[in-house]
Length: 149
Image 1 (cartoon, rainbow, N blue to C red):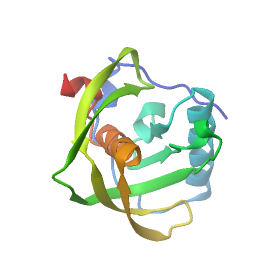
Image 2 (cartoon, rainbow, N blue to C red):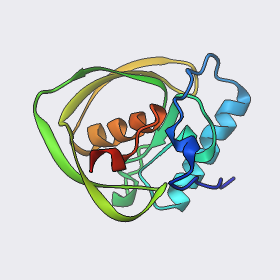
Image 3 (cartoon, helix red, strand yellow):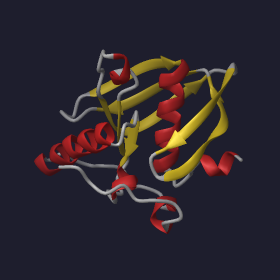
Image 4 (cartoon, rainbow, N blue to C red):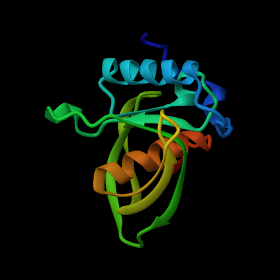
C-alpha cells in the first residue's frame, strides 16, 4: 500500500523516533508499504517518520534506478564509525519540495542494524550509500537536510 509522505513543515518530522523492540507481522507489512511508497515516489530512501511511523526504521535502495535493485531495510540503525574523509552531495528529500540542498557527510561509515527478520548485521558503506544512510538516520533523529543550509 502506498502511504502518504508527510511534508515539511509538518512538526512531526522533527520528532525523535523510538527504538523498535520487536519485529512483528505489522512491522513487516509497514516495511513493504515503505518500499512501495519509496519506489512510487521515485526515491532512494524513506524513513518511518516520513509516513507517520515513529520508530527507528528506514528503507533504502540506492541501485534500483540503475536496474539492479538492492532493497535494504534497517531497524534501529547505529553508526559505529565514520571516516574523517567527507563527501559533498546535492541531496533531495521526499518530505521537502524544491531544489536540492548541498550536504557534507562522511564518505565511509560502519553501521549496525537489524533487518525485517530480526537478524543483526554490521556493515561498511561508502559514497552515495553512506550519504543515504546518514540522511535517513537524520530523519530518525528529527533532523532534516534544511538543517545543513
